[in-house]
Structures are given as structure tokens and as C-alpha cells.
Amino acid sequence: MPADPSPRPFFDPATALPPTGRPAAGLLAELDALRAADAPTRGGRTFAYVYDPGRPEVDDLAAAAYRAFATVNGLDPTVFPSVARLENDVVGAVASVLGAPGAQGTFTSGGTESILLAVKTARDQARAERGVRQPELVLPSTAHAAFHKAAHYLGVEPVVVPVDPVTYRAVASDLTAAITDRTVLVVASAPSYAHGVLDPVAEIAAGAAERGVLCHVDACIGGWFLPFLARAGRPVEPFGLSVPGVTSLSVDLHKYGYADKGASVVLYRDAELRRHQYFAHAGWPGYPVVNPTAQGTKPGGLLAQAWAVLRHLGEDGYTELTRRVAGAADEVLAGLRATEGVRVLGEPAGSLVAFTVTDAGDAPDLSLVLHTADEMRARGWYLQPQLSHAGLPPNLHLTLTPATAGQVGALLTDLADAIEAARALAPATVDPALRELAAALDPDALTPEEVAGFLAFAGLAGDGAQGLPARMAPVLALLDVLPPRLKERLLAEFVGSLFRV
Image 1 (cartoon, rainbow, N blue to C red):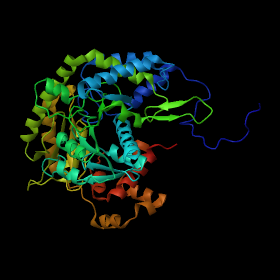
Image 2: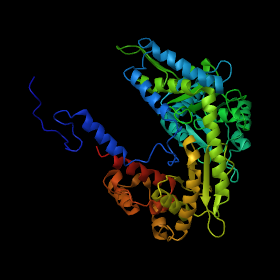
Image 3: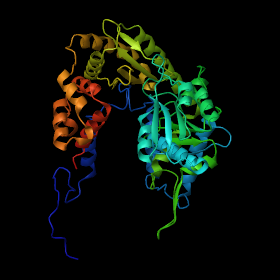
Image 4: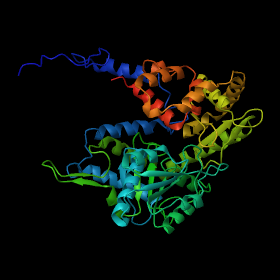
């Protein structure tokens, strides 16, 4: 067959497939160079997104296990029976720690997929058993954004309930009062990501059960930490499927399970509820399709490395790692509470800490929070800035890991210096006229040119990630005052601009 003579519709030498193959050594060297620009994932200085056990052999084991199963396709366990064996072992381990008799679950690609599947299951169960056609999801304002993503994907209306402004915990009676005949699921967090506090799960689940509604506990961040915290002798409120009224739960093994990303489990009270999660289709001429998850093809390597890491560390290993995190949290909290101008938000349940920086009148100061984040980044630390929301103050988020234990002293010393430097800087303020203009804009009516202009003004224009400003305080200060829908539109366009092809 002759070659297609038509010209290529797009050609960029920087991204095009090379005409001839390149040697492996050069490609690996290029990957290493790209990683050099990223935040470090090991060493205890990045306080979001990464979970460092401080044990290099865990990384080596995970990589070797992945390689052993890298070519295995989890789509069909009748062809690859090892997949069913490994998943049963992994889910069984989770069920033994967090479940109840009869609990059933599924291995997923991460917390977002686990949450999406739990919402789908609740929607479909309510449709089948209660005839609900316009489903609602009741959740506290601190519930993870993944629930809003699931609601958006699945046509479920989120009903957001404010949390206690002092403790940052969900108020069980308020969540129960928000339940209607259309509610398919009520959500609790164990703990919430933003502030690291544990919602009153037993009360929330009891209120949902009284109204005949399912209750999901988002334990993505704490599900494989809090049980071992209790085993280490710390008090922990019950939150798993053994709590009456809790009907499903999500737990990420790529967080405090220390498996590679992505590895998560969604767990249900029984197989009858779990069946609403599955998709099956035989109405086409190809092979019969049965998908337990949103994915079809599933990488066997991720399942294998989770299985290997769980069995390598075991109960004693996880308990010891959790004890190290708890010790680091004690030290961090004591240091933060002794630092002038710092206020810890709520009572952290264990491994997550949020704190704000205050002005002379002891009020949270957005500019100081953002400048402190920049100053800490300049000193080699990444603390995650979180903007104000619905009366909740701006703050800096810390995800503590075992590797943090050896870094607390240096962290607190640099933090005190960073706050002092932040107070000496000019405030990161937003022009009132720009704020007024932004409030009048219709995000959905903006043209691409208008969006590009706004991004350029905000300092978010440029050629990919390399175009980011060195200091993010002015950018984040502007984002903080924008209406939520406009903020979402701009951020979506900005992230889209990073992916140029």
C-alpha cells in the first residue's frame, strides 16, 4: 500500500516521534534530568502529595514487584488468575482491619476512583431500591473535592453543609437535617484532608441509617494510619465498617500503606451493595465485558506492588512507622503552638496539620500565609498553601510521614525565619478595581482571548510550567478573592495550557 501523501496536520520537532530510535541510556538520562526540576519525593521536605516511609528497601521491593507484573492485564482474571488472587489478598487485608463480617471490596487506581465508585454505587442502589431519579449527595464543606468530581460525572447534586467554624468537624445533626427523599449518600471524613480533623463518624452514620440512607467514610488519608495509631496506644474514635450505619469506605494504600501510586481500596458492607458498582455489557459482538471499576484495562503491576509492600511491612511494621509519624506530629504541633503568630487549626487526628499565620491582631492573614509558603520554598521546603473558603481561614497544610521525624527541628527553625521574612515583605494585595471587575464577569461567557488575558495579568501565562512565577503569593492572593466559578474556569484553562498538544 502506498504511503499517505497528505501532509501532517501538526508537527513539533520537540514532541514528534523520532524517525529513528534512541539509545536507552540517553532516554533514562533525560528522564533523570526532568525529575531534577520536581519537588523531592524522598527526604521529608515535601509536605503534600508524597508519602515517604524512610525505608529505601520498600521502594526497591515495590519496583521489583511492579516489574514482575508489568505486562499482566487486570481486565480479565480468568486469563490472568494471579490478579484475582492478589486482589483478594489485598482487599482481605483491608477488610480485616477496617471491615465488618461480610465486607467486600475492590482494588482501584486511587482515592478519586474509590470515591467515584462509592457514589455510583449509592446512586444506582437508590435508583433500584428506592426509585430515586434526581439523586443528591449530602457532604460537609470539608469533604474532598473528589466527591464533587464524582457528582459532576454521575449527575448527582451535591448538598454542601458547613462545618463547625472552631473545630472544623462536620456537625452530624446538620448533615442529618439536610437529608431528603432524594439523598443517596451521606459523607464523613476520617480525617478531612484540609485540616486533618476526624468527623464524628458514629453520629453521622447513625443519622443516615435512621433515614435509610447509605453513609460513606472517606478514609483515603487515614484508613491505613488511624488503626495502627490505635495499635500504638493512641486514642482513636471508631470510623470503619464496624461502626453501625457505615456502609462503604475508601482507603488509599499509596498513602500510609506506602505502596506506589495508584493503589486504593473501596470497601462495602456486603456483596449485595458492591454489585451496584459493577458494569457488565454483552450487547456487542466482542468479548463479554465485566468491569468492577471505572477502568477497563488495569495494570497488574500496581496491584502486585501493593500486595508486596503490605506483606513486607505487616502489622508490626506499620505500627512502628505510624508511631514515628505520631512522634513527629507531637513535635511539630508543640513547635507550631510555641511559635508567635501561628495558630493550629482544629485538633489534628494524627498525621495532617493545618496552621495559619496571624497579623498583629491575631487574625489570619492571607498575605503572611502565602509569603511564608514562598519563603519556605526558597529554603527547600514545600508547604501546601490552602486558600480561604466559606469563612474558613487560609492556611498551610503539612502531610507528615516517617521521614519527617528527622526533619522537625530544621523545619521549625526555617519556619520561624520564613515568617519573620514574610512580615518584612509588602502585603500581597489585589487591586480593588480588579476584584470588582472579576465579580462582574460571567466565567462561561469569557472568550479564550479574555481568559488568556486574565491569566497573563494573574501571572499564570507562559510556556508551560516553566512560565510560572518564582513567587506564588501574588497569584494566589488574586485567586483567593475570585468567585469560585471564575477561579475554576481560570485554573482549568491554566492547567490546559501546560499540556500544549
